[in-house]
Length: 298
Image (tube, rainbow, N blue to C red; front, top):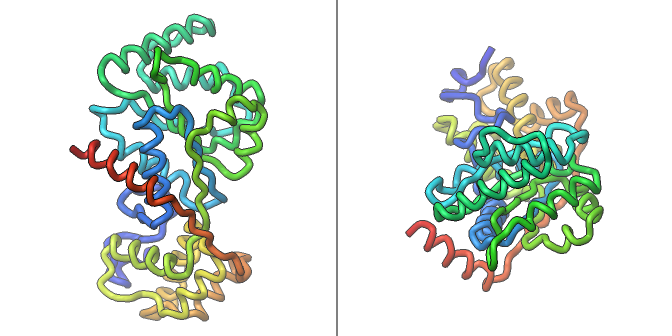
């Protein structure tokens, strides 16, 4: 049973499944993407994006992957699905994603294949970039040492591989397992929860993309959503989706705060006093990044 037609929507607007059509370019997500693209375009080697559960790390990783033009980058996205991954698995997956068709089982031979592939990418005038999502799952010193070794694959004056880690805050502790790798982090950005104002913009954006022709949430309902979700996009989606469905069942044309409160309570959520701390960048950094992006677009 769908509420979409009842509200005149073309599709459900608050699914938590990744969908680039619903990407919301908040100020902090825009700043994060600018910095990460700047890092890989400048061959910084290692960049890190940190954020709590549901703050949009995976969405941003996919957005970054889609934003890197194929003629300038050989890029891929690797998702770490469990904490038991080995260095051999990581290297093999990276090699496959960068175009090594038959990765060797011997580690030395595999590294030689990867190095030759990276040289080929460099000679084609492109940059090799691997984005790694759920990077906090990589919890062993051996893995951190392996990444340090991968960053050593270079030619005079230029790194051959750029890595971008997307992970929860505990990723910082994982990086400390190998101090030389931690010192190689050239760019780091922290995602925080949304403010009340940005939460409202986020909700309206998703509704607009879904084809809404009118307001579907009363102002006090949006305030209630913010209180219960704490500005976390994933929770905002869950509350909004359930609130629209509950209102549809009751044949209510616009969601009110009572509906939101009832839904959030059923979900086991309590009001949050969390304040969003928006990350900032220096104006000089933004100027450099803007100039770089102008060159990319040109």
